[in-house]
Length: 485
Ligand code: NAD
Image 1: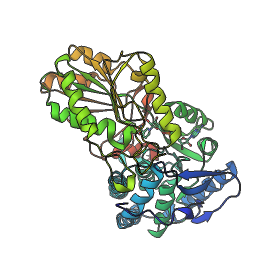
Image 2 (image 1 turned 180 degrees about the horizontal axis):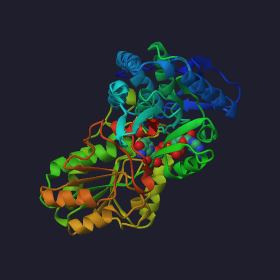
Image 3 (image 1 turned 45 degrees about the vertical axis):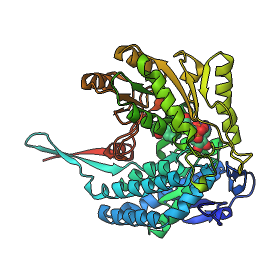
């Protein structure tokens, strides 16, 4: 392998609660390297009691020295954590690679982004000011931001480390405490970061990690001492989480699925558009919530875009993530079969597959969960493969005669996470940005966004915003105070 296999993965067999590794007898979830099936770790499935212990620890931390810390001092601890993440980047990236399957340099990029989130929000700690409000001569009013309380973070498997950081970092910056529940498939990096949190000097109990599955997540989302639930995952689960968090009522941020359109109109720079499409649908093997999975294109450009994108895809290297290929495996064989099921049904419906549509395990990983870059052309807008989130490297193409039709097709799904457009016409671009139903729009550079821009969806892609200063709203409670004098 180009990068060495991490040697210490089997030590990850615990929850991290109140600064302690807590081991639990009973059912374990087996973590296997999706490229070769090698056992990576065995993690406990957290019970409702374990969840309660973690929440109680976070309640105590809030009442204890974390709650008393000056914001400037909180910031210094978070800066130290970011430095530790940088210092451990190679180990963290290797752990993430064997757990998720993604190419090493993509994992390294996620680790870099993780440090960046902690650094960005460390800078926010001591700038969270309130405001005074004019109430007349005999009253003085002000609004002060306070930490919301214990925050729960239920995480997905596709970007385990950076999704963890993008929720935990603003929560800590606000002075809140964190109980994280990583996805059952990918708990390793959250545990590794939680140990660095302690090493940075952040007090025990401020950030707890409970491993487990849907039952663990449900116990956390419905826990009465949790004030805010930040959930990243599928729309179906998001619906359940919202319900679970409603009694007693907690704040909810939902980052859900997508079926994002990339529109390419006459006059667009085709090479730029192809680069954006490749980034949008083949990166992380298409397992991205923001995947640009629908190409909506002017008739005269269709074949050129599809041919250039296919040529790019044929040139992609496919290998174990530690050999740092362009394409690694999907998260599991089960998920590969789910992705391939979409393609098989589309074929059975008579749709034309011009690229891929089959497994792609390389010779050195014969049983791995690889799936080839795949393109279905001229797909009816209402076809299953054009409506459902496939969550693999599978693109559908759709012809639009003009910008109006492109917008109509772009909006014709239940999702609204991100959208992209390639056009030299600024009026066309601005009208699209205004009218497309999405939380984020990329003009002439799909997914070329900063990590500090607010992020989130509309429609069935979610509610609330993460990243940027907007995320602070989920983790602070605004208290209004009035003095009569
Ligand atoms: P998932 O919904 O199956 O699981 C997500 C998390 O929820 C896991 O930790 C799981 O254990 C937990 N969970 C499952 N049932 C639960 C319940 N009833 N109550 C509480 N928790 C429960 O999603 P996944 O398959 O892990 O992730 C893929 C999905 O995540 C895709 O739909 C993708 O688009 C979405 N996603 C969205 C974003 C975003 O920012 N919008 C980012 C990454 C992934």
